[in-house]
Image (tube, rainbow, N blue to C red; front, side, top):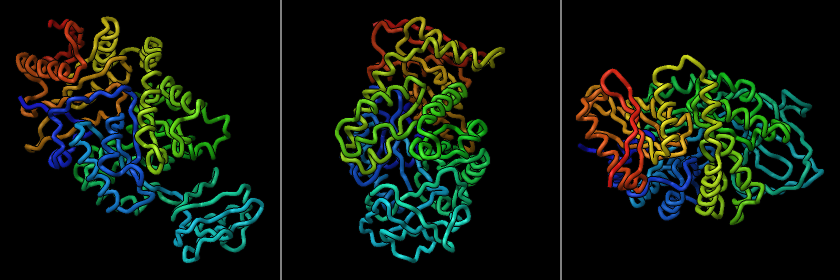
Length: 498
């Protein structure tokens, strides 16, 4: 029986390009909390990306607010080479630009802004950016405050130097009348995204549930991308206001605390973070937190407050930490990933899983669905018998996600037995973001999900052998198996021999 490891959609193209993952020897990271690294100028060589993967990065983010498709394609090719050399799995996330206000500096020379002087924001992008004039990509700003024609005169409150060709402009609590999925975003997704079969789409500035529905409708027309998961990026007061309806539509949530910290009073940010993560946990959808170790963009160590912030995000129930500038243009991308991973691992050791489990079961209520009952029972059994892993048979990924929802303290080995459609393998499982989903084993699709007992036993044996080979399962360990046998789903506890 042919088995191989897969992550995210385990995209065929990345495997065809030499990323033969069937012999992955070290799939588990120190922390089960996922780390998303943004690849860019300081983290795009094969050597650096390989070190990032070995240090714990499991999702590579490509930010199209800067850099063209050719630049990002070269970086992605380096990622493929790094995956091949390290045998570490990594999903791909495309981050859209969205309705972002941008200041374009065609001169590319640094611009110095002095406190207590004025600067004009103008929609005339043909003008050159200077210390007194900044061209922006939006004409509607002059409708909301006192202006001089279409130009907006602002008072600079603190001195700063703007370096590079592009800057982001954030206007607090003002609706920007630009589409969430812009024409530029659609072009990038339909070309670069389709070419590379992206695993995740990070939808910047998500403001309404309709934004998610529109993006999903667009993806559904692009072949394999109809399986791409959409993560709503909450960045302003409008997205916060409609959070509950957005959560229902999205596959996951990214809490962009940088921009949120501008829209919200500083003392309110932690309240939203805790409430949002709790709602994501109860819905069984991944919650991702950003802007945690900003100081590591230029320093080798995080501040004590930042280290505590990372740990508290994990204790609150965050499933992943997203690193932006820290790995994009930071001086220490590998060290940042490594340190964040170690902090997450320490926090996981003291995570109150018992309290979390009781809270989640109570939230679900009764009667539970059959699948939810089986998933919660598998986690409860694994905790009671101190199992080393949970092995889950799944054809749609739903059972494995429900197990992850209850945040077991041990890894989950998901045996994915895909269904066939028109003789093509359907990649149906995106587990790279599930916090407790540390490994995915892909079974031969010729074996149907509802297989015979003998076939199930042979598949189980291969999964156990794989767990032993990776060092997750050891002699005399206990293992909990959640699988479907005929019309029934069962949870079994196995005690292994030598």
